[in-house]
Image 1 (cartoon, rainbow, N blue to C red):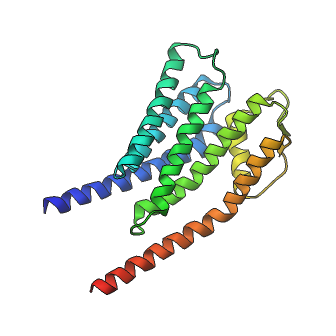
Image 2 (cartoon, one colour):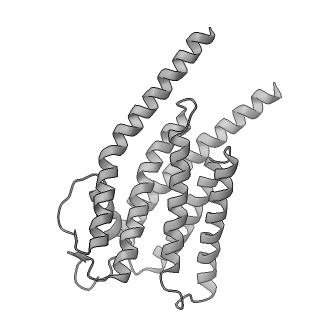
Image 3 (cartoon, one colour):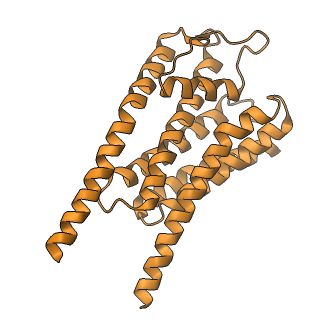
Length: 232
């Protein structure tokens, strides 16, 4: 009885934390970047708080995988510590440090969530939530990559509005998801070779990901039904 209760609590924690991760990603992508002026102090505050919460919820979501838990916890700890430090001490001597740590920590979280989604086991509800969260995470990671590329190569993209040469985060979120979904409006165009390579890779993932995830979840469901049939 105790073992069953513990198993139920663990399952509820996985589902709750994965649902929270998905909700935070939705806020980070579809609400905050477009709700506040790009140069507002609230943007930085909301960005740092949301990134920290996303990483913490990601840690909780993969807590049943010890190695993955340790890797994500270390990456999240570094990213959160650097962002907290940046509020107390200027980090101008290391340009791009915040962007790089955010990119790496989110990429590591995406890899770990991907392992959880595509790994062995039953097609559980938290795995389905993880598949949706991973898709949004891919768009977020690429947005961070585009912004980082543009900060080092200001002419890497054509179509950035005048007076906004670097582009605010909403611009890169928009461009990333337009590329991921292969809509391709053409208002922003990658010009530099590395920018084009990132865009091609993201578009390829955007085409293949839904089919691969659907096939994997169906195969897990069929395998689970077969195991139940054989055991009965």
